[in-house]
Image (cartoon, rainbow over all chains, first blue to last red; front, side, top):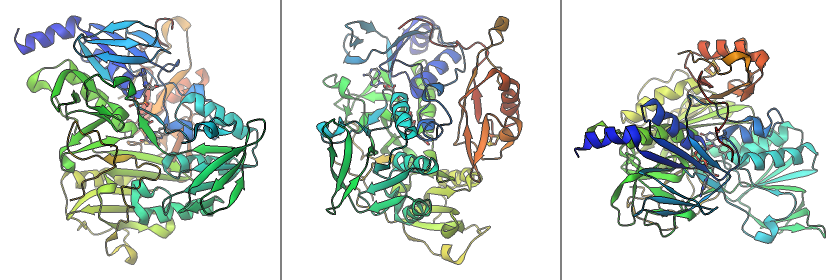
Length: 464
Length: 88
Ligand SMILES: Cc1cc2nc3c(=O)[nH]c(=O)nc-3n(C[C@H](O)[C@H](O)[C@H](O)COP(=O)(O)OP(=O)(O)OC[C@H]3O[C@@H](n4cnc5c(N)ncnc54)[C@H](O)[C@@H]3O)c2cc1C
Ligand code: SF4
């Protein structure tokens, strides 16, 4: 059968299974239907909830403004799907094209989309992680429990790890009037994602808002009382801290365990796929019926030296899901590459932070507008003489402009006359990223080398 | 692009689910002006919104969707199911 006839047939009566019923899974399903897929659609998700949105969990929900179960995602259209929620996929048989479920059911597919995302990295010592008062934040259930605990007015909250999630949690705690200590192994908050120059601004923001920020420090153990309630944390500088809540913000781990032995190039850092969202198998050969999207994917990006990027970004999940869905029901030349320029936002301590491009690739940084000291600025990151990323604090409307500079490989430092340029911004300085082999809280963009079937645990960005 | 909102069918009016693409949002605050119960500015330009608006805010939300200069607000589509169609 010619390829386009097969594609037409598949569109009409194929069987699509989506594993992971969250942002990427939902948006992909909607796109399939929008683009005329009339076959059968099965949505499998291990959470017992309809697809919901995670960014509000560390913001509106922790501020007590929105209930955790009020964050369901809107539906762009009718799906006519079969939903299997509250049951995990436990295995994949590529040869027979079946997904095994935890309840024993086997679901057959013609094409599969894997959108199983990531989960919170738990505290490393299980007995301590189980103490009453120790939390992670990834799901609506996590958020609802943490919100209840914060509402009860703990004496002090300890946030372990000052990445975006940890910093947003600290911000919400301060806004609720709670005492909070942040322990960060790196030299500053957000340093893995934005580097030391911007990290210093984040550190100042935290302190200005009354956070007891301790950098260059790790939490070595959590101690409970007889009843199993958290009461104290021990730090690497030999001090101890009385706390009744600890939130572990040590980054996320990809949900790929269920694919062990499946033959796909799936490892702890995600599932490798091509720019068209097709998964690679362990030999580095691209599959044609298995697609990947969202936090669980890592895919090569032409703008960034074809490196495989793992992104933990809302916008990536949406954009990649749409491309994956389109390609699932298209053939050959109709297929599209996922060329989205990485971008994310964060709101913390009253500041709107936005980033575009891949800051951790940046060797140098230059403040192009505003001033670091005013918490209101845009800074551009340079890599081998071109603009590779930009970050804005309370300057959101400039981000699109910088995206275009990145897309056009504009020279760094940028040559345009700064509209609001200060002396401190005149010269690029080192962007000051920590040694990437020592991940702190996990940057939200991970450069993960070149080889599709590469499954090493080491964090090894190729920097030149 | 104004998106029709679910809940019009025979008086079965349900709360409106919404999400804002905050990559796209430029903090112009039109939505906060038109639907202050649902959208508020937090600090100078960070938008906070309620992901589920009540029936009383429905009209306001629809106006905000239409007024957003960068089409960043998505609400339930007209034919969207309120929830998953089968039981767990
Ligand atoms: C607290 C928090 C705040 C955030 N804030 C921001 C922000 O401000 N800006 C930003 O850009 N991004 C933010 N993000 C990131 C953003 O939410 C993610 O990028 C996005 O959720 C990714 O969507 P996804 O569908 O790929 O994965 P996920 O949302 O992780 O969904 C994957 C789903 O698959 C399910 N699943 C996993 N394994 C299985 C299995 N074996 N069988 C069945 N189902 C399975 C999971 O339970 C989950 O429901 C935030 C994330 C969190 C947790
Ligand atoms: S109107 Fe649109 S751009 Fe303006 S604040 Fe609201 S969502 Fe953002």
